Amino acid sequence: MKIAIVGAGVIGVTTAHELAADGHEVTVFERHAAVAEEASFANGGVVGPGYLALAGPPAGLRTEGGRPATLPWPPSRAGLRWRSAARRANAPERWADSRRRLLALANYSRERLHALSLDLQLEYDCAPGCLVLWRTDKDRAAHQETLAFLQEAGVRHEELSPEGVRALEPGLNPETPLAGALHLPDDGVANCRQFTLLLRRAAQALGAHFAFRCEVAPLDRSAPTLLRVTQADGSTESLRFDAVVLCVGAGSAALLRPLGLPPAVPLMAAQRHSIRAPLGEPLNAPESAVIDAQRQVSISRLGQRLRVAGGAALDSTAGRRDPEAIAGLYGVLQDWFPAGALLSGRCATVQEWSGTRAVLPDGPPVLGASGVPGIWLNLGHGDHGWGLACGSARVVADQLASRPPAIDTDGLGITRLLDA
Figure 1: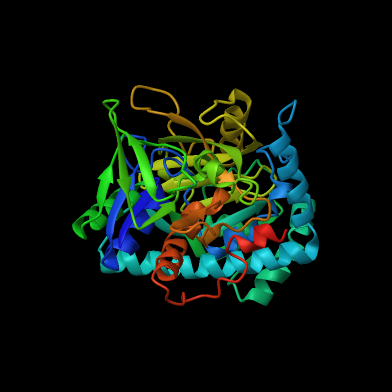
Figure 2 (figure 1 turned 120 degrees about the vertical axis):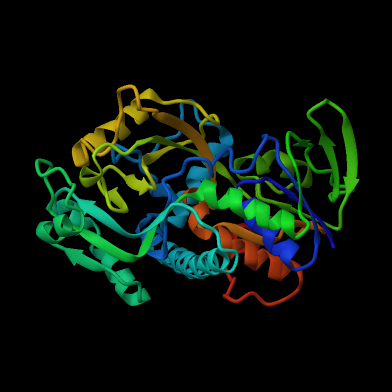
């Protein structure tokens, strides 16, 4: 089949590789000049089913200060609808179902990530293990339900005392209060952008074509697989495909609007921030990944650099800088690893990044057929696009080929949103 993919983040590139590996003629359209230029550019890098299981439902999105994320004032009508749907999804029984689906997809995605890395001999910055740090006994108590879920789901984990935590992460600041931590040995940290760049080359070797600096117009209901593409030089052409897979995250709503799908696919943009800096004193930096449970901020060692990531402002403008949120990231870094990063001096190159990702009200992404002939969806992964990308891509490729996916996809399609 002749297939177009819109979006060249980690979701789009993994989808391109899986479809090209299946023998399809694949073209990827991206409005930026390279892959992984938006949500995949500088995320926290934490990947694994345990990390995903820690997340609360979208209605409970938190800022880096630990407060519930709020809509801007005045809120948009779409924002209010999304918040209402997210509150319904917050019901314990509904969130329990969503979390089980997410965990199954995360396990499968981790297997696919490892298999691709091994088969293609991809070398990128990564390290095993993740610690969720509890500042207080209240933080520990708040995670007891999650610990029970991890136990039930068979996710390897261990509850550590402060002494056990410092044995694994000796660089932790001894002056910051620490009540213990949750250790997730099968989770870890990996550089999403490096992986995406390498997988793009692998997809090209299989025949996939990447078209950059291209704007795809909203889809036409009368001919949904006829893409109107504007090139960097301003020229426009119409290109017909057998199928189109949308992997463009928060920008999907505009593309889907003429098809009448945005109400059924209620995507909300959530703002995230990160800072990246060279390692300072390696002995005073994390060995892998740590997450401040109270502040909802991750600190990860990726090669010779340190990355701090967090934030969850809803309905925000793509790329909008929030000085207060970024200052909060520096504060968490100072709390835990004050000498871990080189933040000033001649050799210091600190990168501050802000971006958005698309979040659905109930948590899981929407994968598969859209209900419109020829239009397929792989979007709405929220904060977990990196951790779900490889599995999601394989699921969509199998569905497009009318093959049963390797995991149960009940509850991951668009019908769950229509029935919500």
